[in-house]
Length: 286
Image (cartoon, rainbow, N blue to C red; front, side, top):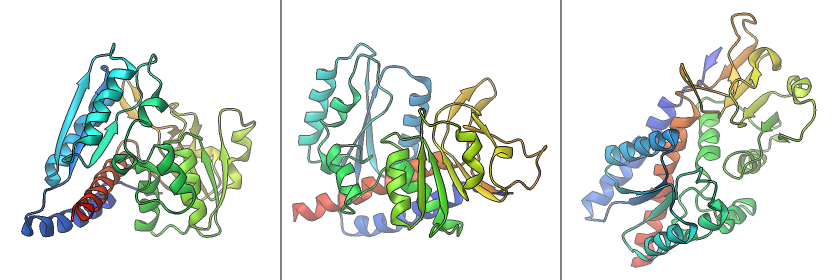
């Protein structure tokens, strides 16, 4: 089985960003700035935000994390976002999800200026994605497409299943795969007999958020598995798919590891999106 590691793909994108930024520095241009809003003390969210900060520092981006208490109200978050929208030094705004239960995430996300919506989650940017007019694309789905390209995995004409229909991963990934001329089926929590249908697909992208809900032996022989799951366990992070390859050797052709797979790509694409928006802002300022 080929292990589809995210590190070499992420490094390729980082190198491209560093090359572009070296030109910016030579011209005295202001480097990109990313603002992240973190509400509450979700341990997983804190880790993700820390990794994003580390990547910003590595690439030379300026960044800030606005930490807010669990009790913060929806209107208070929206007021902060409004200020960031109006701040010309801010190129990208990211609200770390999930938010506390008393906050309507959609209302908060819609407060972000579409031109600073670095994760491509506003209605305006999702609509542009659907109509092939997107300037940037959602981080995790676009990162998955980059992995397919890097490892030479053909998508054209392939039967691909996407399990999960969230606006963060499943739904936008479906559209990106269709653009690559794949035949795509999408499954979700109300779909029946998913396990019985898995062997019909050449590639399966699992974004459910439940640990080990599937296992390698359930998939078609020589299938490619993209595991988007990041679930915490006593042994660390584990995916949505259980690696039972010891009992079924050579069942799977290729799969992403957890950790070390898609998660690295999400952060890399966040940096790429921030750079893209920053470049657009610099151009508009001329």
